[in-house]
Amino acid sequence: MPMKITRATALSAFECLASGLRLDIYRLLVKHAPDGLVAGQIATTLALPPSNLSFHLKALTHAQLITVTQEGRYQRYRAALALMDALIGYLTAHCCTGHPEQCGATAASTRRQAKSCA
Image 1 (cartoon, one colour):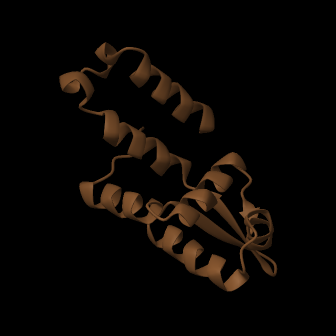
Image 2 (cartoon, helix red, strand yellow):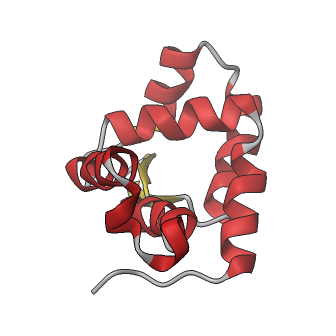
């Protein structure tokens, strides 16, 4: 069953992703889905100091865009793919007056891309 999101959830997610650095972190985690990355791998890949990264990971977690699990001494971060799919659905739900199938290749391509990441 598709995840339903509220306008407030969508606004929180989009506001969080408005930071270029957070967008880079999120896209990196989407790329490494479903396994995710530990904080050190993210910091190394994006050349970020740990304190700066920690601030942005906290914001992404608060916006529910990523999840974190403890693995011994490390924390593994993963993109919340269900929320990503729901955000895409939220943006396209009323495409072509509520008939996204009539929107042609754009809507179909967006849905295919979202499903291939899930």
